Length: 303
Image (spheres, rainbow, N blue to C red):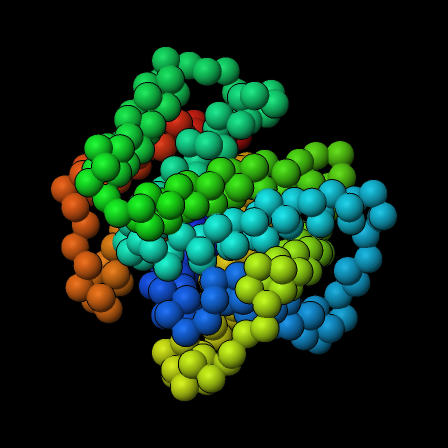
Protein backbone atom coordinates (compact mmCIF):
# COMPACT_ATOMS: atom_id res chain seq x y z
CA UNK A 1 0.00 0.00 0.00
CA UNK A 2 1.47 3.40 -0.98
CA UNK A 3 2.49 5.53 1.98
CA UNK A 4 -0.12 8.34 1.46
CA UNK A 5 -2.91 5.78 1.05
CA UNK A 6 -1.78 3.91 4.16
CA UNK A 7 -1.80 7.13 6.19
CA UNK A 8 -5.35 7.94 5.06
CA UNK A 9 -6.47 4.41 5.99
CA UNK A 10 -4.85 4.75 9.43
CA UNK A 11 -6.54 8.13 9.85
CA UNK A 12 -9.96 6.57 9.24
CA UNK A 13 -9.22 3.64 11.54
CA UNK A 14 -8.12 6.02 14.30
CA UNK A 15 -11.32 8.08 13.98
CA UNK A 16 -13.39 4.91 14.29
CA UNK A 17 -11.48 3.63 17.33
CA UNK A 18 -11.64 6.95 19.17
CA UNK A 19 -15.27 7.60 18.21
CA UNK A 20 -16.31 4.33 19.84
CA UNK A 21 -14.33 5.04 22.99
CA UNK A 22 -16.82 7.61 24.31
CA UNK A 23 -19.59 5.01 24.59
CA UNK A 24 -17.18 2.48 26.13
CA UNK A 25 -16.17 5.03 28.79
CA UNK A 26 -19.84 5.47 29.75
CA UNK A 27 -20.10 1.76 30.53
CA UNK A 28 -16.89 1.88 32.61
CA UNK A 29 -17.81 4.90 34.75
CA UNK A 30 -21.18 3.30 35.51
CA UNK A 31 -19.28 0.52 37.31
CA UNK A 32 -16.16 2.16 38.83
CA UNK A 33 -15.03 5.67 39.83
CA UNK A 34 -13.73 7.74 36.90
CA UNK A 35 -10.02 8.06 37.77
CA UNK A 36 -9.83 4.33 38.52
CA UNK A 37 -11.57 3.59 35.21
CA UNK A 38 -9.06 5.75 33.36
CA UNK A 39 -6.24 3.95 35.20
CA UNK A 40 -7.63 0.58 34.06
CA UNK A 41 -7.73 1.80 30.47
CA UNK A 42 -4.12 2.96 30.51
CA UNK A 43 -2.95 -0.07 32.52
CA UNK A 44 -4.31 -2.48 29.89
CA UNK A 45 -2.72 -0.38 27.15
CA UNK A 46 0.65 -0.32 28.90
CA UNK A 47 0.62 -4.10 29.38
CA UNK A 48 -0.24 -4.60 25.70
CA UNK A 49 2.52 -2.25 24.53
CA UNK A 50 5.10 -3.86 26.83
CA UNK A 51 4.20 -7.35 25.56
CA UNK A 52 4.27 -6.24 21.92
CA UNK A 53 7.62 -4.47 22.16
CA UNK A 54 9.12 -7.39 24.05
CA UNK A 55 7.95 -9.75 21.31
CA UNK A 56 9.45 -7.44 18.67
CA UNK A 57 12.68 -7.15 20.72
CA UNK A 58 12.25 -3.38 20.44
CA UNK A 59 14.62 -1.31 22.56
CA UNK A 60 12.74 1.42 24.41
CA UNK A 61 15.82 3.13 25.77
CA UNK A 62 15.96 6.86 25.12
CA UNK A 63 18.28 9.60 26.44
CA UNK A 64 17.39 10.83 29.91
CA UNK A 65 16.52 14.36 28.79
CA UNK A 66 14.26 13.03 26.02
CA UNK A 67 12.58 10.61 28.45
CA UNK A 68 11.69 13.49 30.77
CA UNK A 69 10.06 15.31 27.86
CA UNK A 70 8.16 12.15 26.88
CA UNK A 71 6.80 11.73 30.40
CA UNK A 72 5.70 15.36 30.53
CA UNK A 73 4.02 14.98 27.13
CA UNK A 74 2.36 11.76 28.36
CA UNK A 75 0.85 13.66 31.26
CA UNK A 76 -0.84 16.07 28.84
CA UNK A 77 -1.57 13.61 26.00
CA UNK A 78 -3.11 10.85 28.13
CA UNK A 79 -3.01 11.23 31.93
CA UNK A 80 -4.72 14.59 32.44
CA UNK A 81 -7.19 14.34 29.51
CA UNK A 82 -8.30 10.83 30.47
CA UNK A 83 -8.87 11.91 34.07
CA UNK A 84 -10.97 14.87 32.89
CA UNK A 85 -12.84 12.87 30.24
CA UNK A 86 -13.85 9.98 32.50
CA UNK A 87 -14.95 12.42 35.21
CA UNK A 88 -16.94 14.47 32.69
CA UNK A 89 -18.66 11.47 31.13
CA UNK A 90 -20.28 10.63 34.44
CA UNK A 91 -22.26 13.82 33.93
CA UNK A 92 -22.82 14.20 30.16
CA UNK A 93 -23.66 11.91 27.25
CA UNK A 94 -20.99 10.14 25.16
CA UNK A 95 -22.25 11.97 22.07
CA UNK A 96 -21.74 15.41 23.63
CA UNK A 97 -18.28 14.37 24.84
CA UNK A 98 -17.41 13.28 21.31
CA UNK A 99 -18.68 16.57 19.86
CA UNK A 100 -16.57 18.58 22.32
CA UNK A 101 -13.58 16.44 21.37
CA UNK A 102 -13.95 18.00 17.93
CA UNK A 103 -12.50 21.25 19.31
CA UNK A 104 -9.02 19.72 19.82
CA UNK A 105 -7.61 21.04 16.49
CA UNK A 106 -8.87 24.54 17.32
CA UNK A 107 -6.99 24.56 20.62
CA UNK A 108 -3.95 22.93 18.97
CA UNK A 109 -3.85 25.71 16.38
CA UNK A 110 -4.24 28.49 18.96
CA UNK A 111 -1.59 27.01 21.27
CA UNK A 112 0.68 26.52 18.26
CA UNK A 113 0.30 30.18 17.34
CA UNK A 114 1.22 31.22 20.87
CA UNK A 115 4.47 29.24 20.81
CA UNK A 116 5.30 29.84 17.15
CA UNK A 117 4.73 26.32 15.79
CA UNK A 118 2.18 27.16 13.11
CA UNK A 119 2.14 28.82 9.75
CA UNK A 120 0.93 32.38 9.29
CA UNK A 121 -2.58 33.25 10.47
CA UNK A 122 -4.24 33.71 7.07
CA UNK A 123 -7.75 35.00 6.46
CA UNK A 124 -8.91 31.45 5.82
CA UNK A 125 -7.51 30.25 9.13
CA UNK A 126 -8.90 33.26 10.97
CA UNK A 127 -12.32 32.43 9.54
CA UNK A 128 -11.84 28.82 10.66
CA UNK A 129 -11.05 29.91 14.21
CA UNK A 130 -14.04 32.25 14.37
CA UNK A 131 -16.36 29.59 12.96
CA UNK A 132 -14.98 26.89 15.23
CA UNK A 133 -15.26 28.86 18.44
CA UNK A 134 -18.69 30.13 17.41
CA UNK A 135 -19.72 26.48 17.16
CA UNK A 136 -18.26 25.92 20.62
CA UNK A 137 -20.43 28.75 21.98
CA UNK A 138 -23.49 27.25 20.29
CA UNK A 139 -22.78 23.85 21.90
CA UNK A 140 -22.52 25.50 25.29
CA UNK A 141 -25.45 27.91 24.82
CA UNK A 142 -28.01 25.86 26.81
CA UNK A 143 -25.55 25.73 29.70
CA UNK A 144 -24.67 29.42 29.45
CA UNK A 145 -28.37 30.26 29.77
CA UNK A 146 -28.51 27.99 32.87
CA UNK A 147 -30.88 25.51 31.23
CA UNK A 148 -28.50 22.69 32.11
CA UNK A 149 -28.02 21.08 35.50
CA UNK A 150 -24.99 21.85 37.64
CA UNK A 151 -23.57 18.38 36.95
CA UNK A 152 -23.96 18.89 33.20
CA UNK A 153 -22.18 22.24 33.36
CA UNK A 154 -19.29 20.72 35.33
CA UNK A 155 -19.10 17.70 33.04
CA UNK A 156 -19.05 19.85 29.92
CA UNK A 157 -16.30 22.01 31.42
CA UNK A 158 -14.23 18.94 32.28
CA UNK A 159 -14.45 17.60 28.73
CA UNK A 160 -13.45 20.98 27.29
CA UNK A 161 -10.47 20.84 29.63
CA UNK A 162 -9.71 17.41 28.17
CA UNK A 163 -9.65 18.94 24.68
CA UNK A 164 -7.15 21.60 25.81
CA UNK A 165 -4.90 18.97 27.41
CA UNK A 166 -5.03 16.84 24.25
CA UNK A 167 -4.07 19.86 22.14
CA UNK A 168 -1.10 20.72 24.35
CA UNK A 169 -0.01 17.08 24.42
CA UNK A 170 -0.14 16.78 20.63
CA UNK A 171 2.12 19.82 20.23
CA UNK A 172 4.59 18.42 22.77
CA UNK A 173 4.56 15.11 20.91
CA UNK A 174 5.13 16.84 17.59
CA UNK A 175 8.27 18.52 18.94
CA UNK A 176 9.51 15.13 20.16
CA UNK A 177 8.86 13.24 16.94
CA UNK A 178 9.83 15.83 14.33
CA UNK A 179 12.06 18.26 16.23
CA UNK A 180 15.67 18.01 17.31
CA UNK A 181 14.89 15.01 19.54
CA UNK A 182 13.67 13.00 16.52
CA UNK A 183 12.32 10.35 18.90
CA UNK A 184 10.98 7.00 17.74
CA UNK A 185 7.19 7.06 17.91
CA UNK A 186 7.04 3.54 19.38
CA UNK A 187 9.34 4.40 22.29
CA UNK A 188 7.42 7.64 22.72
CA UNK A 189 4.14 5.74 22.91
CA UNK A 190 5.46 3.40 25.62
CA UNK A 191 6.96 6.16 27.77
CA UNK A 192 3.95 8.45 27.45
CA UNK A 193 1.61 5.63 28.43
CA UNK A 194 3.87 4.80 31.40
CA UNK A 195 3.71 8.41 32.57
CA UNK A 196 -0.08 8.48 32.24
CA UNK A 197 -0.46 5.23 34.17
CA UNK A 198 1.77 6.45 37.02
CA UNK A 199 -0.19 9.70 37.26
CA UNK A 200 -3.60 7.96 37.23
CA UNK A 201 -2.56 5.45 39.92
CA UNK A 202 -1.63 8.32 42.23
CA UNK A 203 -4.66 10.43 41.25
CA UNK A 204 -7.11 7.58 41.81
CA UNK A 205 -5.59 6.78 45.21
CA UNK A 206 -5.69 10.42 46.34
CA UNK A 207 -9.20 11.25 45.10
CA UNK A 208 -11.07 7.94 45.32
CA UNK A 209 -9.32 5.82 47.96
CA UNK A 210 -10.09 2.12 48.12
CA UNK A 211 -12.22 0.84 45.24
CA UNK A 212 -14.92 -1.82 45.51
CA UNK A 213 -14.57 -3.90 42.33
CA UNK A 214 -17.71 -5.99 42.79
CA UNK A 215 -19.77 -3.81 40.43
CA UNK A 216 -17.03 -3.97 37.81
CA UNK A 217 -16.70 -7.78 37.82
CA UNK A 218 -20.49 -8.09 37.78
CA UNK A 219 -20.68 -5.96 34.61
CA UNK A 220 -19.58 -7.77 31.42
CA UNK A 221 -20.13 -4.56 29.44
CA UNK A 222 -17.70 -2.67 31.71
CA UNK A 223 -15.03 -5.38 31.45
CA UNK A 224 -15.36 -5.61 27.66
CA UNK A 225 -15.22 -1.81 27.47
CA UNK A 226 -11.98 -1.67 29.47
CA UNK A 227 -10.43 -4.26 27.15
CA UNK A 228 -11.55 -2.28 24.09
CA UNK A 229 -10.35 1.03 25.54
CA UNK A 230 -6.96 -0.32 26.56
CA UNK A 231 -6.12 -2.49 23.57
CA UNK A 232 -7.70 -0.64 20.69
CA UNK A 233 -8.52 2.97 21.52
CA UNK A 234 -5.31 3.53 23.55
CA UNK A 235 -2.46 1.13 22.70
CA UNK A 236 -3.21 0.76 18.99
CA UNK A 237 -4.79 4.20 18.59
CA UNK A 238 -1.89 6.14 20.08
CA UNK A 239 0.63 4.23 17.97
CA UNK A 240 -1.37 5.33 14.93
CA UNK A 241 -1.80 8.88 16.25
CA UNK A 242 1.90 9.41 16.98
CA UNK A 243 2.74 8.00 13.56
CA UNK A 244 0.36 10.51 11.93
CA UNK A 245 1.77 13.40 13.99
CA UNK A 246 5.23 12.51 12.69
CA UNK A 247 3.93 12.24 9.12
CA UNK A 248 1.45 15.13 9.02
CA UNK A 249 2.07 17.41 12.01
CA UNK A 250 0.00 17.99 15.16
CA UNK A 251 -2.81 20.15 13.73
CA UNK A 252 -3.49 17.98 10.69
CA UNK A 253 -3.28 14.74 12.69
CA UNK A 254 -5.67 16.10 15.32
CA UNK A 255 -8.17 16.62 12.50
CA UNK A 256 -9.12 13.00 13.19
CA UNK A 257 -11.88 14.76 15.09
CA UNK A 258 -13.63 15.38 11.74
CA UNK A 259 -15.04 11.88 11.99
CA UNK A 260 -14.78 10.86 15.66
CA UNK A 261 -17.71 13.07 16.86
CA UNK A 262 -20.01 11.60 14.21
CA UNK A 263 -19.02 8.07 15.24
CA UNK A 264 -19.55 8.95 18.92
CA UNK A 265 -23.02 10.40 18.26
CA UNK A 266 -23.98 7.33 16.21
CA UNK A 267 -22.94 4.81 18.90
CA UNK A 268 -24.48 6.97 21.63
CA UNK A 269 -27.81 6.66 19.83
CA UNK A 270 -27.38 2.91 19.22
CA UNK A 271 -26.57 2.07 22.86
CA UNK A 272 -28.34 4.79 24.86
CA UNK A 273 -30.89 6.27 22.43
CA UNK A 274 -29.47 9.75 23.06
CA UNK A 275 -30.28 12.24 20.31
CA UNK A 276 -28.13 15.41 20.13
CA UNK A 277 -29.83 18.72 20.83
CA UNK A 278 -30.25 21.04 17.89
CA UNK A 279 -27.58 23.29 19.42
CA UNK A 280 -25.16 20.36 19.74
CA UNK A 281 -25.72 19.29 16.14
CA UNK A 282 -25.39 22.84 14.78
CA UNK A 283 -22.31 23.47 16.92
CA UNK A 284 -20.69 20.25 15.69
CA UNK A 285 -21.17 21.29 12.06
CA UNK A 286 -19.69 24.73 12.78
CA UNK A 287 -16.70 23.33 14.69
CA UNK A 288 -15.88 20.75 12.01
CA UNK A 289 -16.24 23.37 9.27
CA UNK A 290 -13.85 25.61 11.18
CA UNK A 291 -11.33 22.79 11.55
CA UNK A 292 -11.49 22.13 7.80
CA UNK A 293 -10.68 25.79 7.16
CA UNK A 294 -7.68 25.48 9.49
CA UNK A 295 -6.33 22.63 7.37
CA UNK A 296 -6.30 23.79 3.73
CA UNK A 297 -5.58 21.13 1.11
CA UNK A 298 -1.90 20.75 0.37
CA UNK A 299 -0.64 21.08 -3.15
CA UNK A 300 0.99 18.01 -4.69
CA UNK A 301 4.78 18.17 -4.76
CA UNK A 302 6.30 18.48 -8.17
CA UNK A 303 8.58 15.74 -9.44
